[in-house]
Amino acid sequence: MARIAVLGSGAGSNFQALLEKLGGQISLVVSDQPDAGILKKAKAAGLQTVVEEGGPDLSARILSHLDGIDLICLAGFMRLVKEPLLGAFPRRILNIHPSLLPKYPGKAAWEQALVDGAGKTGCTVHFVDAGMDTGEVILQAEVPVLSGDNAGILHERIQQAEHRIYAEAVRLVLERLKHVE
Ligand code: GRF
Image 1: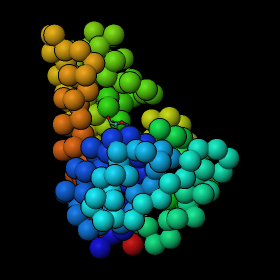
Image 2: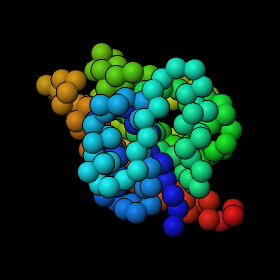
Image 3: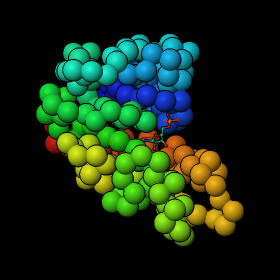
Image 4: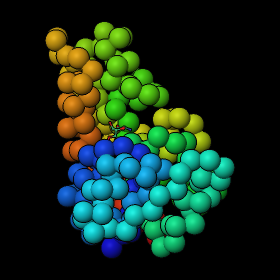
């Protein structure tokens, strides 16, 4: 069974969806925010948690907790992942982003879609590289932008799609890794 670490800074709804769909494969949750909802959810599920606050060497400090981990899932992690963490997990760090990348990278992507007057947006699971939301796409789902949408309603609709596709993308990547090992 694969061992997955989830890194997040926020509420942790994607973590919760991953946990429900991938069960015992999630073995560690790391956050840079001591009060993050994701930590409360992880503790409630009886999982091991680690807090590493921002600052120098954050990626190295996180890496020091990842012995035996096969795959990393970023789920609302609001920090850039850097060396030596990136190089230690080549094509083994995934992120979920609330737009159809390469459209609307960066913060509040659902607001960018609204400002743009887009008829549709969505979410993307991609491999993480040194850029912001630039790595190879693994899976995407489209979400319509409806008249009367505001930022909250649209983000909520995108998150429902996120909760569907993140676990599916993880399964795809784990399946591919089995074939190369
Ligand atoms: C999600 O919308 C994700 O796309 C973005 O941050 C949000 C995290 O939400 N990167 P949650 O903490 O999983 O509820």
